[in-house]
Length: 171
Image 1 (cartoon, helix red, strand yellow):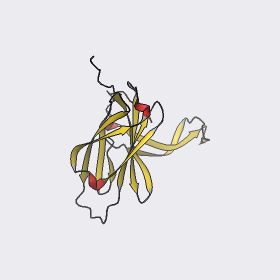
Image 2: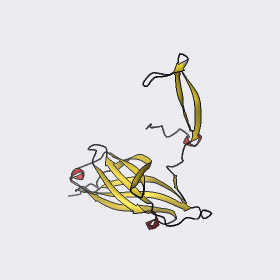
Image 3: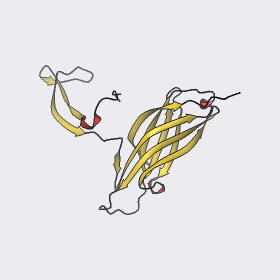
Image 4: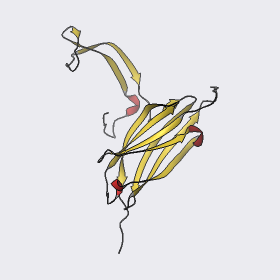
């Protein structure tokens, strides 16, 4: 994963994948390449939007507001669209939101059925409880988004967000 400055226009970025070449032969693992062959160029998804056909979902603007106790309030914006030109049978996909605290590595999972989400732009709000949040004043967490289907899990998006400090108490 790479972090880019905010001024970079990511809509024009592409992913180039190919086989490395070193001195006229294919590169060995961990060997530095000076050229590439059999390259393919891929567009990158925008705003973390991914297709779980017939749906497309984008999750963004995450925030974890610390309460000053052992809980945190999680808030995420999402946009869900459905391609009505595609006909599907029963839709058993779920979205797994996995919060991973960067300081401790402790993770919290929340499953949401696609049918529990509304089409359009909305928010997801829920609380997490754990001793790792006690006396926490800041830090960051990673949101991993998985597509769950028939017991299989596929990572579709990951993004790092910062915790919002707890409100100051006035005595």
